[in-house]
Image 1 (spheres, rainbow, N blue to C red):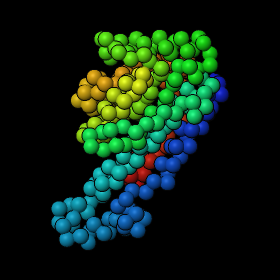
Image 2 (spheres, rainbow, N blue to C red; image 1 turned 90 degrees about the vertical axis):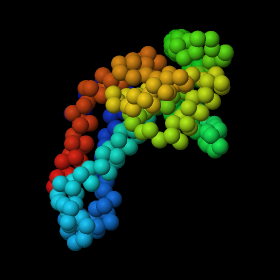
Image 3 (cartoon, one colour; image 1 turned 180 degrees about the vertical axis):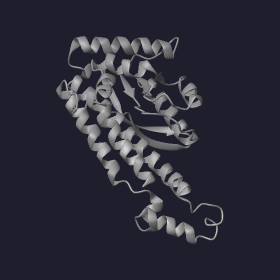
Image 4 (tube, helix red, strand yellow; image 1 turned 30 degrees about the vertical axis):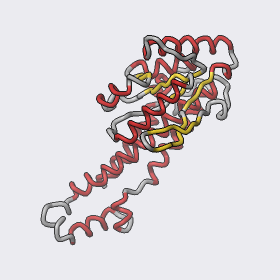
Length: 256
C-alpha cells in the first residue's frame, strides 16, 4: 500500500505509477524486428552466418543486446518521472498554474537557433504567498553570488533543467545546455540544474558549474524542499517498494 500523507503525495504517486506501468508495454527493437518474440530473435541469430560462428546466437548475447535497449527505456522513463514530479510539486505547493511555471525562448547554440524551455520556471512576482516568495528570492540570491562573484543582473526568477541523471557526453547537447544557461542568466533568471542520481558524468558536471547552479548529493532534494516546502526524497523513500517492483519485473523479463 502506498504511504500517502497529503494530496500532493497522491498526485505524485499516481504520476509515477502511471509512467512505470508503461514499462510493461516496452518491446525491444530487435525483438520487434524478429516478429515480436525472443525465441524468434534467437532463431534468426542462429541462422546468421556470422552470429552463429562467434557465439552471438547465445542466450547470453541476446540478453545483453536486449538489456541495452531496456536500460535506455528505463532511464528515459525516469527522466519523465523526475521532470513531471518536480513540476507538479511546484504547481501544487506554490499554487501556480502550468502557464505560470512556463518559460520558453529561442536560443543560439553554435550556428543553430533552437527553441528551448525550462522544465520549471518560478518568477518571483507570480508567487502568491509573501513568505514563500521571500524564501525563494533569498535562496536564489545566495546561489547567484556563488555562480558569479560580481553579478550584473537583477534576478526576476529561477529556471530549472531537471535531470534524473546526466551521463551523456554529446557535444551538441552540452553546447545547447550552456547556451540555455547563459540566456537565462542575462534574462535575470537563475539557471539551476538539479541532478538527482549520483552517477552523472563528472566531466560534464564540472564543466556546467561555470554556467549552471548544479545541485547534487543531498543538495538536490534539499533545494526542492527549500523552494517548495515539500520533502520529495521522504516521499520517494516511503514509497520505494512500490516504485522498485515494476522496474525489477521488467529486468527479470530479460532472462525469460
